Length: 126
View 1: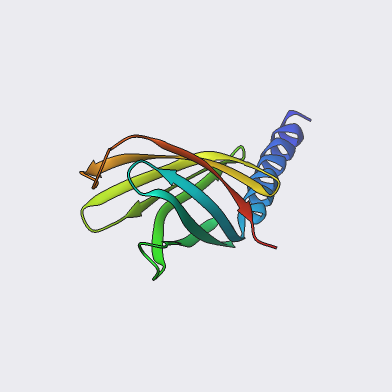
View 2: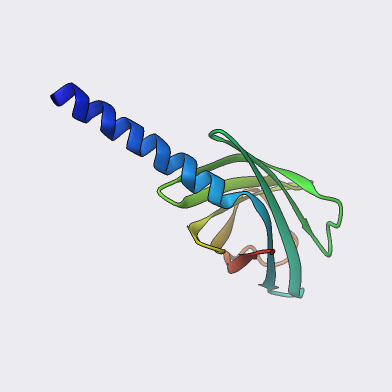
């Protein structure tokens, strides 16, 4: 009986992770308020294959999509990294339905302009 409960717990956890990841799939748009640059329209696109998450980032300064890396989703919290020319940014935040609230921080390099954390909300494009 204890073994059965353990197996059920593992299956439920795997299903929850998979369902959360599937909820991330698609195109997301945000207007990111940046110091010094004003509002920057930004697009994220996520693809989910099993537990693997891939995706891209683009905005008005970087119109050609750039791949994200190290993407995960655990308990509806999404994390991923974005490597630009001389800087690596980390994004992290909760996924709630069609809203993805992210905070970005510099984890490597020196960005142009102020190096503050930025928080914004992306919404699923329908």
